[in-house]
Image (tube, rainbow, N blue to C red; front, side, top):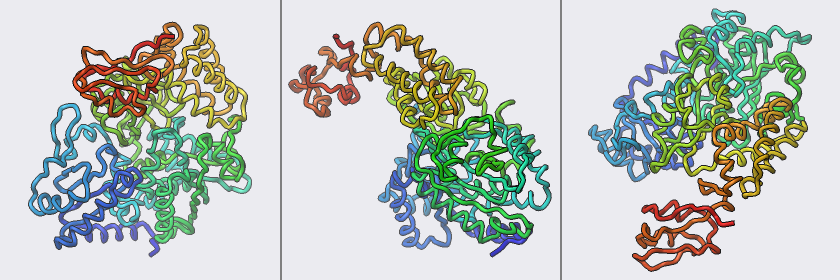
Amino acid sequence: MKLKKARDLENLKDSLVKQKDSQVTEIIISADATCCILKGSKPVAQAFRDEIKKAGLKSTVSLRLAGCLGFCEIEPMIIIKPQNILYQKVKPADVSEIVAETIRNNRIIERLLYKDPQSGEKKKNRKQISFYKKQNRLILGANEEIEPVSIDDYIVIGGYSALAKVLDSMKPEDVISEIKNSGLRGRGGGGFPVGRKWETCRNAECEDGIRYIICNADEGDPGAYMDRSVLEGNPHSVIEGMIIGSIAIGSEQGYVYVRAEYPLAVEHLNLAIEQAESYGLLGKNIMGNGRSFYIKVVKGAGAFVCGESTALMASIEGKVGRPRAKYVHTVERGLNDRPTTLNNVETWANVPHIINRGADWYGKIGTQGSKGTKIFSLVGKINNTGLVEVPMGISLREIIFEIGGGIPKGKRFKAVQTGGPSGGCIPEELLDLAVDYDELSRAGSMMGSGGMIIMDEDNCMVDVARYFLDFLKGESCGKCVPCREGIRRMLEILNRICTGKGKEEDLDTLEELGEYLMDTALCALGSTAANPVLTTLKYFRNEYEAHIVDKYCSAGVCKSLFRFEIVSDACTGCGACRKVCPVEAISGERKEPHIITRDTCIKCSACYSICRFDAIKKIKEVT
Protein backbone atom coordinates (compact mmCIF):
# COMPACT_ATOMS: atom_id res chain seq x y z
CA MET A 1 0.00 0.00 0.00
CA LYS A 2 1.44 3.33 -1.11
CA LEU A 3 0.56 6.47 0.84
CA LYS A 4 0.18 9.23 -1.73
CA LYS A 5 -0.44 12.22 0.51
CA ALA A 6 -0.57 13.36 4.14
CA ARG A 7 -4.29 12.62 4.36
CA ASP A 8 -3.67 8.96 3.48
CA LEU A 9 -1.33 8.66 6.47
CA GLU A 10 -3.91 10.24 8.78
CA ASN A 11 -6.63 7.88 7.53
CA LEU A 12 -4.39 4.87 8.06
CA LYS A 13 -3.59 6.02 11.59
CA ASP A 14 -7.31 6.45 12.41
CA SER A 15 -8.07 2.97 11.12
CA LEU A 16 -5.26 1.38 13.11
CA VAL A 17 -6.26 3.21 16.30
CA LYS A 18 -9.82 1.91 16.02
CA GLN A 19 -8.51 -1.65 15.73
CA LYS A 20 -6.41 -1.25 18.87
CA ASP A 21 -9.23 0.30 20.90
CA SER A 22 -10.94 -3.10 21.11
CA GLN A 23 -8.20 -4.40 23.39
CA VAL A 24 -8.79 -4.09 27.14
CA THR A 25 -5.56 -5.19 28.85
CA GLU A 26 -2.03 -4.81 27.51
CA ILE A 27 0.90 -6.97 28.53
CA ILE A 28 4.17 -5.36 27.44
CA ILE A 29 7.30 -7.52 27.53
CA SER A 30 10.74 -6.12 26.86
CA ALA A 31 11.52 -9.08 24.66
CA ASP A 32 12.82 -7.83 21.31
CA ALA A 33 16.17 -6.32 22.28
CA THR A 34 19.61 -7.81 22.81
CA CYS A 35 19.79 -7.14 26.55
CA CYS A 36 16.32 -8.61 27.14
CA ILE A 37 16.97 -11.72 25.06
CA LEU A 38 20.20 -12.42 26.97
CA LYS A 39 18.24 -12.21 30.23
CA GLY A 40 15.74 -14.86 29.03
CA SER A 41 12.81 -12.80 27.74
CA LYS A 42 11.96 -15.00 24.75
CA PRO A 43 10.79 -18.05 26.78
CA VAL A 44 8.72 -15.68 28.97
CA ALA A 45 7.06 -14.20 25.88
CA GLN A 46 6.25 -17.66 24.54
CA ALA A 47 4.82 -18.68 27.90
CA PHE A 48 2.49 -15.66 27.78
CA ARG A 49 1.35 -16.55 24.25
CA ASP A 50 0.54 -20.10 25.34
CA GLU A 51 -1.17 -19.06 28.56
CA ILE A 52 -3.31 -16.35 26.93
CA LYS A 53 -4.45 -18.82 24.30
CA LYS A 54 -5.10 -21.53 26.88
CA ALA A 55 -7.14 -19.14 29.05
CA GLY A 56 -9.19 -17.91 26.06
CA LEU A 57 -8.15 -14.30 26.54
CA LYS A 58 -6.99 -13.44 23.02
CA SER A 59 -9.94 -11.11 22.46
CA THR A 60 -9.43 -9.09 25.65
CA VAL A 61 -5.66 -9.13 26.15
CA SER A 62 -2.96 -7.85 23.79
CA LEU A 63 0.63 -9.00 24.06
CA ARG A 64 3.33 -6.61 22.87
CA LEU A 65 6.94 -7.67 22.41
CA ALA A 66 8.69 -4.32 22.84
CA GLY A 67 12.30 -3.31 22.59
CA CYS A 68 14.45 -2.31 25.56
CA LEU A 69 12.47 -0.53 28.30
CA GLY A 70 15.63 0.79 29.91
CA PHE A 71 15.66 -0.97 33.27
CA CYS A 72 18.10 -3.71 32.27
CA GLU A 73 18.91 -4.68 35.87
CA ILE A 74 15.45 -6.22 36.39
CA GLU A 75 14.98 -8.00 33.06
CA PRO A 76 12.92 -9.88 32.04
CA MET A 77 10.33 -7.30 33.01
CA ILE A 78 6.69 -6.83 32.05
CA ILE A 79 4.30 -3.89 32.29
CA ILE A 80 0.58 -4.48 32.58
CA LYS A 81 -1.66 -1.64 31.43
CA PRO A 82 -3.83 0.26 32.20
CA GLN A 83 -2.81 -0.34 35.84
CA ASN A 84 0.89 0.30 35.00
CA ILE A 85 1.90 -2.72 37.10
CA LEU A 86 5.57 -3.64 36.72
CA TYR A 87 6.85 -7.13 37.45
CA GLN A 88 10.59 -7.80 37.50
CA LYS A 89 12.81 -10.80 36.74
CA VAL A 90 9.84 -12.79 35.47
CA LYS A 91 10.40 -16.46 34.67
CA PRO A 92 8.28 -18.71 32.43
CA ALA A 93 7.07 -20.50 35.56
CA ASP A 94 5.56 -17.22 36.83
CA VAL A 95 3.38 -16.61 33.78
CA SER A 96 0.39 -18.81 34.61
CA GLU A 97 0.15 -17.16 38.04
CA ILE A 98 0.33 -13.66 36.50
CA VAL A 99 -2.49 -14.47 34.09
CA ALA A 100 -4.64 -16.12 36.77
CA GLU A 101 -4.08 -13.61 39.55
CA THR A 102 -3.31 -10.24 37.95
CA ILE A 103 -4.96 -10.42 34.54
CA ARG A 104 -8.09 -12.27 35.60
CA ASN A 105 -8.55 -11.12 39.20
CA ASN A 106 -6.56 -7.84 39.38
CA ARG A 107 -4.50 -9.10 42.31
CA ILE A 108 -0.88 -8.12 42.84
CA ILE A 109 1.85 -10.78 43.12
CA GLU A 110 4.07 -9.29 45.81
CA ARG A 111 7.19 -11.37 45.19
CA LEU A 112 7.46 -10.10 41.60
CA LEU A 113 7.32 -6.42 42.49
CA TYR A 114 10.37 -4.19 42.27
CA LYS A 115 12.05 -3.52 45.61
CA ASP A 116 13.83 -0.19 46.04
CA PRO A 117 17.50 -0.94 46.94
CA GLN A 118 17.70 2.02 49.33
CA SER A 119 14.32 2.17 51.08
CA GLY A 120 13.44 -1.51 50.76
CA GLU A 121 9.91 -0.53 49.68
CA LYS A 122 8.09 -2.55 47.06
CA LYS A 123 6.50 -0.59 44.22
CA LYS A 124 3.71 -1.95 42.06
CA ASN A 125 3.22 1.05 39.76
CA ARG A 126 6.00 1.77 37.29
CA LYS A 127 5.52 5.52 37.72
CA GLN A 128 6.32 5.23 41.45
CA ILE A 129 9.71 3.64 40.83
CA SER A 130 12.64 6.00 41.37
CA PHE A 131 14.36 4.74 38.23
CA TYR A 132 11.61 6.26 36.08
CA LYS A 133 10.44 9.23 38.19
CA LYS A 134 13.04 11.80 37.13
CA GLN A 135 13.42 10.66 33.57
CA ASN A 136 11.98 12.41 30.53
CA ARG A 137 11.77 9.53 28.06
CA LEU A 138 11.26 11.58 24.92
CA ILE A 139 13.12 9.10 22.68
CA LEU A 140 12.99 5.87 24.69
CA GLY A 141 9.38 6.25 25.83
CA ALA A 142 8.03 5.06 22.47
CA ASN A 143 9.67 1.67 22.97
CA GLU A 144 6.88 0.49 25.26
CA GLU A 145 4.19 1.73 22.86
CA ILE A 146 5.31 -0.22 19.79
CA GLU A 147 6.69 -3.48 18.53
CA PRO A 148 9.91 -2.59 16.69
CA VAL A 149 9.00 -4.83 13.75
CA SER A 150 5.67 -3.05 13.14
CA ILE A 151 5.44 0.16 11.09
CA ASP A 152 1.73 0.25 11.92
CA ASP A 153 2.52 0.56 15.64
CA TYR A 154 4.80 3.49 14.87
CA ILE A 155 2.13 5.18 12.77
CA VAL A 156 -0.44 4.76 15.58
CA ILE A 157 1.72 6.84 17.96
CA GLY A 158 2.14 9.57 15.36
CA GLY A 159 5.02 8.14 13.37
CA TYR A 160 5.78 9.78 10.00
CA SER A 161 3.39 12.66 10.79
CA ALA A 162 6.42 14.97 11.05
CA LEU A 163 7.50 13.86 7.57
CA ALA A 164 3.97 14.48 6.26
CA LYS A 165 4.03 17.96 7.81
CA VAL A 166 7.35 18.78 6.16
CA LEU A 167 6.17 17.56 2.74
CA ASP A 168 2.81 19.29 3.04
CA SER A 169 3.64 22.71 4.45
CA MET A 170 7.36 23.36 4.99
CA LYS A 171 10.19 24.48 2.76
CA PRO A 172 13.72 23.08 3.32
CA GLU A 173 14.73 26.45 4.78
CA ASP A 174 11.81 26.24 7.23
CA VAL A 175 12.95 22.83 8.42
CA ILE A 176 16.51 24.04 8.97
CA SER A 177 15.25 27.13 10.78
CA GLU A 178 13.13 25.00 13.11
CA ILE A 179 16.06 22.74 13.97
CA LYS A 180 18.34 25.75 14.51
CA ASN A 181 15.84 27.48 16.77
CA SER A 182 15.35 24.31 18.83
CA GLY A 183 18.98 24.37 19.96
CA LEU A 184 19.46 20.68 19.14
CA ARG A 185 23.13 19.68 19.38
CA GLY A 186 24.64 16.50 18.01
CA ARG A 187 24.36 13.61 20.45
CA GLY A 188 27.35 11.74 19.06
CA GLY A 189 29.89 13.44 21.29
CA GLY A 190 30.95 16.72 19.72
CA GLY A 191 27.73 18.57 20.50
CA PHE A 192 27.84 20.66 17.32
CA PRO A 193 24.60 22.60 16.58
CA VAL A 194 22.61 20.41 14.20
CA GLY A 195 20.79 23.21 12.36
CA ARG A 196 24.05 24.99 11.54
CA LYS A 197 25.50 21.76 10.17
CA TRP A 198 22.46 21.19 7.94
CA GLU A 199 22.48 24.78 6.70
CA THR A 200 26.18 24.69 5.82
CA CYS A 201 25.73 21.40 3.99
CA ARG A 202 22.75 22.67 1.99
CA ASN A 203 24.64 25.83 1.00
CA ALA A 204 27.91 24.09 0.15
CA GLU A 205 28.98 24.31 -3.48
CA CYS A 206 28.50 21.07 -5.36
CA GLU A 207 28.69 20.85 -9.15
CA ASP A 208 26.56 17.73 -9.58
CA GLY A 209 24.19 18.49 -6.69
CA ILE A 210 24.85 15.18 -4.94
CA ARG A 211 24.70 15.38 -1.15
CA TYR A 212 24.66 12.63 1.44
CA ILE A 213 22.97 11.91 4.76
CA ILE A 214 24.67 9.55 7.21
CA CYS A 215 23.54 8.06 10.49
CA ASN A 216 26.49 7.14 12.69
CA ALA A 217 25.51 3.99 14.60
CA ASP A 218 29.08 2.84 15.15
CA GLU A 219 28.78 2.73 18.92
CA GLY A 220 32.13 1.56 20.26
CA ASP A 221 32.39 2.88 23.83
CA PRO A 222 32.75 0.13 26.45
CA GLY A 223 29.48 -0.20 28.35
CA ALA A 224 27.49 1.99 25.93
CA TYR A 225 24.44 0.67 24.09
CA MET A 226 22.12 3.66 23.66
CA ASP A 227 22.16 3.67 19.86
CA ARG A 228 21.72 -0.08 19.69
CA SER A 229 18.59 0.10 21.84
CA VAL A 230 17.03 2.89 19.78
CA LEU A 231 17.67 1.05 16.51
CA GLU A 232 16.38 -2.22 17.96
CA GLY A 233 13.37 -0.69 19.69
CA ASN A 234 12.25 2.11 17.36
CA PRO A 235 14.11 2.10 14.02
CA HIS A 236 11.40 4.10 12.24
CA SER A 237 12.11 7.17 14.39
CA VAL A 238 15.66 7.26 13.01
CA ILE A 239 14.52 6.67 9.44
CA GLU A 240 11.92 9.45 9.68
CA GLY A 241 14.53 11.86 11.05
CA MET A 242 16.90 11.02 8.21
CA ILE A 243 14.22 11.54 5.55
CA ILE A 244 13.41 14.96 7.01
CA GLY A 245 17.12 15.77 7.04
CA SER A 246 17.41 14.73 3.40
CA ILE A 247 14.66 17.17 2.43
CA ALA A 248 16.37 19.94 4.39
CA ILE A 249 19.78 19.59 2.73
CA GLY A 250 18.68 18.26 -0.67
CA SER A 251 19.94 14.69 -0.53
CA GLU A 252 18.66 11.54 -2.23
CA GLN A 253 21.02 9.00 -0.66
CA GLY A 254 21.54 8.08 2.96
CA TYR A 255 23.63 5.55 4.84
CA VAL A 256 23.36 4.00 8.27
CA TYR A 257 26.81 2.89 9.39
CA VAL A 258 26.16 0.33 12.11
CA ARG A 259 28.34 -2.10 14.01
CA ALA A 260 28.27 -5.64 12.64
CA GLU A 261 28.19 -6.76 16.30
CA TYR A 262 24.59 -5.45 16.42
CA PRO A 263 22.81 -8.12 14.33
CA LEU A 264 19.35 -7.50 15.83
CA ALA A 265 19.64 -3.75 15.23
CA VAL A 266 20.63 -4.44 11.62
CA GLU A 267 17.72 -6.86 11.21
CA HIS A 268 15.15 -4.43 12.59
CA LEU A 269 16.59 -1.54 10.61
CA ASN A 270 16.50 -3.42 7.30
CA LEU A 271 12.94 -4.53 7.97
CA ALA A 272 11.91 -0.96 8.83
CA ILE A 273 13.45 0.32 5.58
CA GLU A 274 11.49 -2.28 3.60
CA GLN A 275 8.26 -1.36 5.39
CA ALA A 276 8.77 2.38 4.85
CA GLU A 277 9.44 1.75 1.14
CA SER A 278 6.32 -0.40 0.82
CA TYR A 279 4.21 2.46 2.23
CA GLY A 280 5.77 5.01 -0.08
CA LEU A 281 7.46 6.82 2.81
CA LEU A 282 10.96 6.06 1.54
CA GLY A 283 12.48 5.57 -1.89
CA LYS A 284 11.19 7.12 -5.11
CA ASN A 285 8.51 9.86 -5.08
CA ILE A 286 7.92 9.93 -1.31
CA MET A 287 4.20 10.24 -0.57
CA GLY A 288 3.63 11.45 -4.13
CA ASN A 289 5.61 14.63 -3.45
CA GLY A 290 8.22 14.07 -6.16
CA ARG A 291 11.11 13.80 -3.69
CA SER A 292 13.20 10.65 -3.46
CA PHE A 293 15.47 9.32 -0.75
CA TYR A 294 17.11 5.93 -0.32
CA ILE A 295 18.84 4.42 2.71
CA LYS A 296 21.56 1.79 2.61
CA VAL A 297 22.81 -0.06 5.69
CA VAL A 298 26.60 -0.46 5.90
CA LYS A 299 28.04 -2.75 8.55
CA GLY A 300 31.27 -1.67 10.23
CA ALA A 301 33.98 -4.13 11.15
CA GLY A 302 34.35 -3.07 14.78
CA ALA A 303 37.07 -0.43 14.56
CA PHE A 304 36.54 2.12 17.34
CA VAL A 305 38.17 4.86 15.29
CA CYS A 306 35.43 4.51 12.64
CA GLY A 307 33.11 6.30 15.02
CA GLU A 308 35.03 9.41 13.93
CA SER A 309 33.22 11.03 11.01
CA THR A 310 35.98 11.10 8.39
CA ALA A 311 37.19 7.58 9.23
CA LEU A 312 33.59 6.37 8.97
CA MET A 313 33.19 7.95 5.55
CA ALA A 314 36.45 6.41 4.37
CA SER A 315 35.13 3.02 5.49
CA ILE A 316 31.88 3.47 3.54
CA GLU A 317 34.01 4.28 0.48
CA GLY A 318 35.79 0.95 0.91
CA LYS A 319 39.02 2.45 2.20
CA VAL A 320 40.88 1.90 5.46
CA GLY A 321 39.01 3.71 8.24
CA ARG A 322 41.46 6.47 9.09
CA PRO A 323 40.64 10.07 10.04
CA ARG A 324 41.75 13.01 7.96
CA ALA A 325 42.62 16.56 8.97
CA LYS A 326 39.64 18.70 9.91
CA TYR A 327 40.50 21.82 7.94
CA VAL A 328 38.36 20.30 5.18
CA HIS A 329 34.84 20.08 6.65
CA THR A 330 32.70 17.08 5.79
CA VAL A 331 29.62 19.29 5.31
CA GLU A 332 31.50 20.70 2.31
CA ARG A 333 33.58 17.70 1.18
CA GLY A 334 32.66 14.50 2.95
CA LEU A 335 31.59 11.13 1.55
CA ASN A 336 32.88 10.71 -2.01
CA ASP A 337 34.11 14.30 -1.74
CA ARG A 338 30.50 15.59 -1.67
CA PRO A 339 28.72 17.70 0.98
CA THR A 340 27.66 15.31 3.76
CA THR A 341 25.56 15.64 6.89
CA LEU A 342 26.41 13.10 9.58
CA ASN A 343 24.54 12.77 12.87
CA ASN A 344 24.19 9.89 15.28
CA VAL A 345 21.17 7.68 16.01
CA GLU A 346 19.85 9.70 18.95
CA THR A 347 20.17 12.98 17.07
CA TRP A 348 18.10 11.76 14.12
CA ALA A 349 15.45 10.34 16.50
CA ASN A 350 14.99 13.82 18.01
CA VAL A 351 14.13 15.45 14.68
CA PRO A 352 10.49 14.23 14.27
CA HIS A 353 9.64 15.43 17.80
CA ILE A 354 10.97 18.92 17.06
CA ILE A 355 9.09 19.18 13.77
CA ASN A 356 5.84 17.96 15.33
CA ARG A 357 5.93 19.97 18.56
CA GLY A 358 8.03 22.96 17.56
CA ALA A 359 11.33 24.55 18.48
CA ASP A 360 9.82 26.54 21.35
CA TRP A 361 8.56 23.37 23.03
CA TYR A 362 11.93 21.65 22.64
CA GLY A 363 13.83 24.69 23.84
CA LYS A 364 12.07 24.55 27.20
CA ILE A 365 13.76 21.23 27.99
CA GLY A 366 17.33 21.34 29.27
CA THR A 367 19.67 24.25 29.88
CA GLN A 368 20.52 27.43 28.01
CA GLY A 369 23.33 25.88 26.01
CA SER A 370 22.19 22.24 26.02
CA LYS A 371 18.59 21.67 24.97
CA GLY A 372 16.47 18.54 25.14
CA THR A 373 17.12 15.19 26.76
CA LYS A 374 20.12 12.86 26.71
CA ILE A 375 20.24 9.07 26.91
CA PHE A 376 22.93 7.55 29.13
CA SER A 377 23.91 3.95 29.68
CA LEU A 378 24.27 3.68 33.45
CA VAL A 379 26.69 0.83 34.19
CA GLY A 380 29.37 -0.24 36.64
CA LYS A 381 29.03 -0.12 40.43
CA ILE A 382 25.37 0.94 40.47
CA ASN A 383 22.20 -0.75 41.71
CA ASN A 384 19.96 0.16 38.78
CA THR A 385 21.91 -0.54 35.63
CA GLY A 386 20.23 0.39 32.38
CA LEU A 387 19.43 3.17 29.95
CA VAL A 388 18.22 6.46 31.37
CA GLU A 389 16.92 9.46 29.45
CA VAL A 390 17.07 12.69 31.40
CA PRO A 391 16.68 16.41 30.70
CA MET A 392 19.96 18.24 30.20
CA GLY A 393 20.98 20.04 33.37
CA ILE A 394 20.08 17.27 35.80
CA SER A 395 22.85 16.67 38.35
CA LEU A 396 25.13 13.66 38.50
CA ARG A 397 23.89 13.06 42.04
CA GLU A 398 20.29 12.75 40.87
CA ILE A 399 21.24 10.31 38.11
CA ILE A 400 23.45 8.11 40.30
CA PHE A 401 21.63 8.10 43.61
CA GLU A 402 17.97 8.74 42.74
CA ILE A 403 17.57 7.17 39.31
CA GLY A 404 20.47 4.73 39.66
CA GLY A 405 19.60 3.71 43.21
CA GLY A 406 23.09 4.33 44.62
CA ILE A 407 26.08 2.06 45.07
CA PRO A 408 25.59 -1.67 45.82
CA LYS A 409 26.52 -3.32 49.12
CA GLY A 410 26.80 -0.01 50.98
CA LYS A 411 30.09 0.83 49.28
CA ARG A 412 31.30 4.42 48.98
CA PHE A 413 30.99 6.22 45.66
CA LYS A 414 34.36 7.23 44.23
CA ALA A 415 33.98 8.49 40.66
CA VAL A 416 31.91 8.49 37.50
CA GLN A 417 33.41 8.47 34.05
CA THR A 418 31.33 10.21 31.40
CA GLY A 419 31.96 10.29 27.68
CA GLY A 420 33.33 6.84 26.99
CA PRO A 421 36.94 5.59 27.17
CA SER A 422 38.33 9.04 26.44
CA GLY A 423 36.06 10.79 28.91
CA GLY A 424 37.11 12.14 32.27
CA CYS A 425 36.60 10.72 35.76
CA ILE A 426 34.54 13.02 37.98
CA PRO A 427 34.93 12.75 41.79
CA GLU A 428 32.44 12.81 44.67
CA GLU A 429 32.91 16.52 45.37
CA LEU A 430 31.48 17.32 41.91
CA LEU A 431 28.36 15.17 42.17
CA ASP A 432 26.14 18.24 42.06
CA LEU A 433 27.56 19.19 38.67
CA ALA A 434 24.86 19.83 36.06
CA VAL A 435 25.05 17.35 33.21
CA ASP A 436 25.37 19.35 30.02
CA TYR A 437 28.01 19.87 27.34
CA ASP A 438 29.65 22.92 28.87
CA GLU A 439 29.72 21.87 32.54
CA LEU A 440 31.19 18.46 31.81
CA SER A 441 33.83 20.03 29.60
CA ARG A 442 34.81 22.48 32.34
CA ALA A 443 35.27 19.55 34.73
CA GLY A 444 37.72 17.94 32.30
CA SER A 445 35.30 15.37 30.91
CA MET A 446 32.74 15.43 28.12
CA MET A 447 29.25 14.33 27.17
CA GLY A 448 30.45 11.91 24.55
CA SER A 449 27.84 9.58 23.14
CA GLY A 450 26.41 8.91 26.61
CA GLY A 451 28.38 6.27 28.48
CA MET A 452 28.35 6.68 32.25
CA ILE A 453 30.50 4.24 34.27
CA ILE A 454 30.15 4.34 38.06
CA MET A 455 33.08 3.42 40.32
CA ASP A 456 33.24 2.73 44.05
CA GLU A 457 35.91 2.49 46.75
CA ASP A 458 37.21 -0.77 45.30
CA ASN A 459 38.27 0.90 42.06
CA CYS A 460 41.87 2.04 41.75
CA MET A 461 41.88 5.25 39.75
CA VAL A 462 45.41 4.70 38.48
CA ASP A 463 44.34 1.32 37.13
CA VAL A 464 41.18 2.87 35.64
CA ALA A 465 43.30 5.37 33.68
CA ARG A 466 45.63 2.55 32.63
CA TYR A 467 42.71 0.39 31.46
CA PHE A 468 41.16 3.03 29.22
CA LEU A 469 44.49 4.12 27.82
CA ASP A 470 45.24 0.49 26.96
CA PHE A 471 41.90 0.28 25.15
CA LEU A 472 42.63 3.46 23.17
CA LYS A 473 46.13 2.28 22.28
CA GLY A 474 44.63 -0.78 20.64
CA GLU A 475 42.04 1.30 18.78
CA SER A 476 44.35 4.05 17.53
CA CYS A 477 44.68 3.91 13.74
CA GLY A 478 48.36 4.86 14.05
CA LYS A 479 48.18 7.55 11.39
CA CYS A 480 49.46 10.46 13.50
CA VAL A 481 52.56 10.40 15.70
CA PRO A 482 51.06 12.17 18.77
CA CYS A 483 48.34 9.57 19.16
CA ARG A 484 50.37 6.52 18.13
CA GLU A 485 53.44 7.27 20.23
CA GLY A 486 51.95 9.51 22.92
CA ILE A 487 49.37 6.99 24.12
CA ARG A 488 51.94 4.21 24.08
CA ARG A 489 54.40 6.23 26.15
CA MET A 490 51.76 7.27 28.70
CA LEU A 491 50.66 3.65 29.02
CA GLU A 492 54.23 2.52 29.70
CA ILE A 493 54.43 5.00 32.57
CA LEU A 494 51.08 3.90 34.04
CA ASN A 495 52.06 0.25 33.84
CA ARG A 496 55.23 1.08 35.76
CA ILE A 497 53.30 2.97 38.44
CA CYS A 498 50.81 0.12 38.86
CA THR A 499 53.64 -2.31 39.57
CA GLY A 500 55.32 -0.07 42.14
CA LYS A 501 58.15 1.07 39.87
CA GLY A 502 56.95 4.61 39.27
CA LYS A 503 58.88 7.80 39.99
CA GLU A 504 57.54 11.13 41.22
CA GLU A 505 58.63 12.90 38.05
CA ASP A 506 56.39 10.51 36.09
CA LEU A 507 53.37 12.58 37.11
CA ASP A 508 54.73 15.71 35.45
CA THR A 509 55.60 13.69 32.36
CA LEU A 510 52.07 12.29 32.16
CA GLU A 511 50.58 15.78 32.33
CA GLU A 512 52.97 17.10 29.70
CA LEU A 513 52.27 14.23 27.32
CA GLY A 514 48.53 14.54 27.90
CA GLU A 515 48.49 18.24 27.02
CA TYR A 516 50.62 17.54 23.94
CA LEU A 517 48.11 14.94 22.78
CA MET A 518 45.20 17.32 23.25
CA ASP A 519 46.88 20.02 21.17
CA THR A 520 48.37 18.02 18.29
CA ALA A 521 46.47 14.78 17.61
CA LEU A 522 44.75 14.52 14.24
CA CYS A 523 41.30 13.41 15.42
CA ALA A 524 39.12 13.33 18.52
CA LEU A 525 40.33 9.87 19.56
CA GLY A 526 43.83 11.18 20.08
CA SER A 527 42.95 14.66 21.33
CA THR A 528 40.72 13.26 24.09
CA ALA A 529 42.69 10.10 24.89
CA ALA A 530 44.48 11.70 27.83
CA ASN A 531 41.27 12.71 29.62
CA PRO A 532 41.14 9.64 31.91
CA VAL A 533 44.76 10.27 32.93
CA LEU A 534 44.53 14.03 33.34
CA THR A 535 41.29 13.95 35.37
CA THR A 536 42.46 11.16 37.67
CA LEU A 537 45.69 13.07 38.21
CA LYS A 538 43.69 16.19 38.99
CA TYR A 539 41.14 14.66 41.34
CA PHE A 540 42.90 11.54 42.66
CA ARG A 541 46.56 12.55 42.74
CA ASN A 542 46.89 11.05 46.21
CA GLU A 543 46.37 7.58 44.73
CA TYR A 544 49.15 8.11 42.21
CA GLU A 545 51.44 9.32 45.00
CA ALA A 546 50.56 6.32 47.18
CA HIS A 547 51.50 3.98 44.33
CA ILE A 548 54.81 5.75 43.79
CA VAL A 549 55.90 6.77 47.29
CA ASP A 550 54.23 4.21 49.57
CA LYS A 551 54.16 1.38 47.02
CA TYR A 552 50.56 0.70 48.03
CA CYS A 553 47.24 0.37 46.21
CA SER A 554 44.55 1.08 48.80
CA ALA A 555 41.80 -0.24 46.52
CA GLY A 556 43.53 -3.60 46.30
CA VAL A 557 43.62 -3.74 42.51
CA CYS A 558 47.29 -3.43 41.58
CA LYS A 559 48.41 -6.88 42.68
CA SER A 560 52.08 -6.05 43.15
CA LEU A 561 51.25 -3.49 45.84
CA PHE A 562 48.98 -5.29 48.32
CA ARG A 563 48.14 -8.63 49.87
CA PHE A 564 45.17 -10.13 51.68
CA GLU A 565 45.34 -11.01 55.36
CA ILE A 566 42.71 -12.48 57.67
CA VAL A 567 42.19 -10.64 60.97
CA SER A 568 41.97 -13.45 63.49
CA ASP A 569 39.83 -11.50 65.98
CA ALA A 570 37.15 -10.89 63.34
CA CYS A 571 37.22 -14.30 61.63
CA THR A 572 34.43 -16.63 62.78
CA GLY A 573 35.75 -19.65 60.92
CA CYS A 574 32.61 -19.94 58.79
CA GLY A 575 34.66 -21.34 55.90
CA ALA A 576 33.00 -19.26 53.18
CA CYS A 577 36.32 -17.82 52.02
CA ARG A 578 37.94 -21.23 51.93
CA LYS A 579 35.20 -22.62 49.70
CA VAL A 580 35.50 -19.90 47.04
CA CYS A 581 39.30 -19.79 46.88
CA PRO A 582 40.21 -21.22 43.45
CA VAL A 583 43.76 -22.18 44.47
CA GLU A 584 43.09 -23.50 48.00
CA ALA A 585 45.25 -20.79 49.57
CA ILE A 586 43.03 -20.55 52.68
CA SER A 587 43.15 -23.08 55.51
CA GLY A 588 41.70 -23.44 58.99
CA GLU A 589 39.32 -25.47 61.13
CA ARG A 590 35.62 -24.71 61.25
CA LYS A 591 34.76 -22.02 63.84
CA GLU A 592 38.48 -21.23 64.16
CA PRO A 593 40.35 -18.28 62.60
CA HIS A 594 41.59 -19.07 59.08
CA ILE A 595 44.87 -18.06 57.45
CA ILE A 596 45.92 -17.20 53.87
CA THR A 597 49.07 -18.78 52.45
CA ARG A 598 50.77 -15.83 50.78
CA ASP A 599 52.82 -17.81 48.25
CA THR A 600 49.72 -19.60 46.99
CA CYS A 601 47.28 -16.66 46.94
CA ILE A 602 46.68 -15.21 43.46
CA LYS A 603 44.87 -12.13 44.84
CA CYS A 604 41.66 -12.81 42.90
CA SER A 605 39.56 -11.09 45.63
CA ALA A 606 37.01 -13.91 45.81
CA CYS A 607 37.55 -14.31 49.56
CA TYR A 608 37.42 -10.56 50.16
CA SER A 609 34.14 -10.23 48.27
CA ILE A 610 32.36 -13.06 50.08
CA CYS A 611 33.42 -12.36 53.69
CA ARG A 612 30.43 -11.06 55.68
CA PHE A 613 32.43 -10.22 58.81
CA ASP A 614 34.98 -7.76 57.37
CA ALA A 615 37.68 -10.16 58.50
CA ILE A 616 39.77 -10.03 55.32
CA LYS A 617 41.87 -6.90 54.86
CA LYS A 618 43.99 -5.47 52.06
CA ILE A 619 47.36 -4.50 53.44
CA LYS A 620 50.56 -3.19 51.96
CA GLU A 621 52.72 -5.82 50.35
CA VAL A 622 56.19 -5.99 51.86
CA THR A 623 58.71 -5.27 49.12
